[in-house]
Length: 168
Length: 328
Image 1 (cartoon, rainbow over the protein chains, first blue to last red):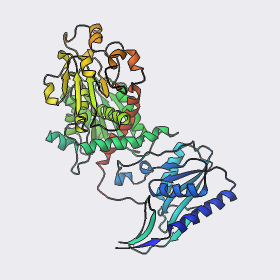
Image 2 (cartoon, rainbow over the protein chains, first blue to last red):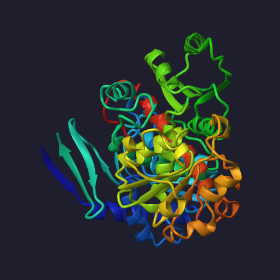
Image 3 (spheres, one colour):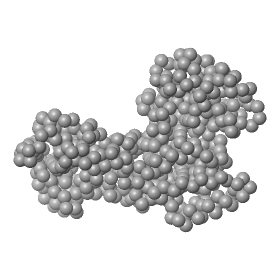
Image 4 (tube, one colour):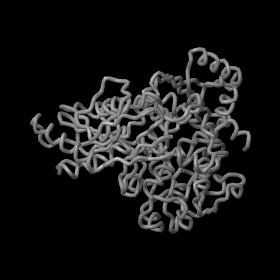
């Protein structure tokens, strides 16, 4: 097994830049950023700092909303979701590490709507790879990655954050 | 013990039925507490539901009256998006065995997935678990004087929330230990989780016949037993279970074993007061204590929902086919 490390700092600046321009273009003030456990929270912490957002960071654990519970069951290490503010009528920036099938994002949006009715949701991901199974796309992407067969992309963290492609 | 274990756990050591704390292990109890912890945020949602058990049918099979336990089980199932059926059956003592099995077969024919059972006879939940179809999980919601494991786990959850760790604690259980399935389950859970000093405080007539078998310290004097405790759990005086004159009078009981602010001074300053409910004010606990700042009696009720959600989702999970990993 060998690993190729990607430039995570560059990817983070790319997402931060795109999020920033998108917020400006859409004229959105004080959005709420929400990271999806676990990798998405690490990325959200970085973005939250880089963008200097005022509202506190929220976290979502989508385990109870997964569409494959009947196949994989639950893990006792699930963390409670923590949304510090009401999401009603607010603009949300949902953050995850890797966008792959799109099922995690669907689950996250389902959970989010159980907390209220946001004004809008924007999706920011560090990495986008092919393999979408649902009509879901990101608004801000740090890096597009094409993986060959047998390759996996993995974020490790939180200190230091590293992103690498491994061949199994 | 071993037999109970085989009945409660599947081949992979996962919880299949939840009948008693006995025969389980510390890690499993911690898994239940951790899973319950993660369900606490569901209550903060506008839509207080997660889709985990969507399409599953859970039957509350209550052969004995209960309000708090049944409603929190019902609420827990509904918050997991399961469909819930409440069946209250006043068991006829003579035809019990037959009635029970017939009821079971009928419910199985309706394709239910889980039975939550409350029964006045010790061992009823085991009996049902033994005879239920293999795809059905059974949760004991209290059987006779035997066990009430979800109550014990919600109490453990409350203690962990209040105190953090278990092993250094002094926990006193006060009152009608002899007739209490709650006390029995609590003692097993406390000792499995490593509590060093478990005390039971009661008049001789309300102690179990062999208190030494539980590995607890026995006190007959409330003041003596309360000294330096971290947690005191008051039990309800079970008038309906009392046979003959185990007690002089409620008034006298309150004088000797009722928890008052004054007696509570003997415990640690940050003592936590618990009671599984329903409380008899002025019998085992004074209103000032029950409603006071050290009481977590209502938090216990709230925690009961998260703990029951955890137990239900873990038990249903054991019926899932074996696969590993998930798709992101």
